[in-house]
Image (cartoon, rainbow, N blue to C red; front, top):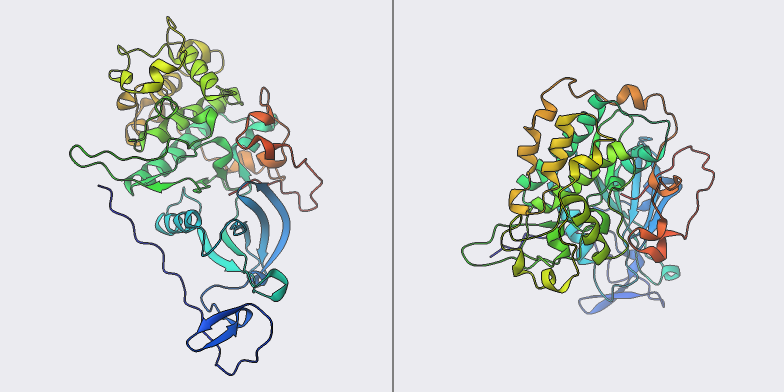
Length: 406
């Protein structure tokens, strides 16, 4: 059975003396007295005023994200607001889990969580503090870069992107963490060419089941276009290999510059997967008939695997085609993991992986999906949370940074 991980330590506020003047502000119990909530001092959580908000850089069901600057050090950061409105009491458990995971994962290719900050509770906000997750700022995300037709990556640069992506996945998987929302918009790249895995809002700790026990994780994770077939068929006992399907989709996207399978529904997504990767049968995927949805879904039959044939018009390198093919394997037990992928000949033949800094230095404007024009073939309504997708249009940004969610 999976052992629950310990939760992060929540700082205890220092309490003013019992002689605090009473008024009608929200109060919390302190022994035999009550005190004003706004007088609580969270000494280990700095106030939001430590940062100067520069511009709003993202919005969705997760809340809002701001680009900001530390008033003292002038360091640029991203501030992700923790949604508290739907919480009847306490701090959101999903946010606690994301914070705990980001505190654990310290790696060059994983977004660094700087700290948590908060607003001071006042009668004007009904005594409720607002909390922000403060992370390092990155100038681009991969979806935004691919939206710009002026950004062209060489084969060596694509190798560097995939090498960093797989290094990040190898690290988090070795630390028993599943990302569960891998997509181009969640891959950040700094102006120096360093890739960062970002947005761990759906991530969770993972453990290998013991003996006959099985994990029962939700399969309602991963953006539809990047969701592996086992999750679409209802698998709940899964592990790190689900993230490698998304890595394969992203790798192909580096050449096609648009998501390769843009399903409108789960049924439609399975149809597109079968068209590209071949029909799902017990010959290519033993025991696939254990899923009830395998017989309930109308899946195409007689389809041959066409991954290499379909992509060879875009991907000219044979080693690259082969690695994509190995990552987009239907049977998860036969799909490459991050370690195996990193040892593929794609990374060990000429040209060698090339640093991205020189190419990115030619572009002074940040590129992010949030304010970029839709890529070819991408309709906004096909993104997750379609009710939110069209709420915000690109606007002029005096700071020349167009940013997405972290």
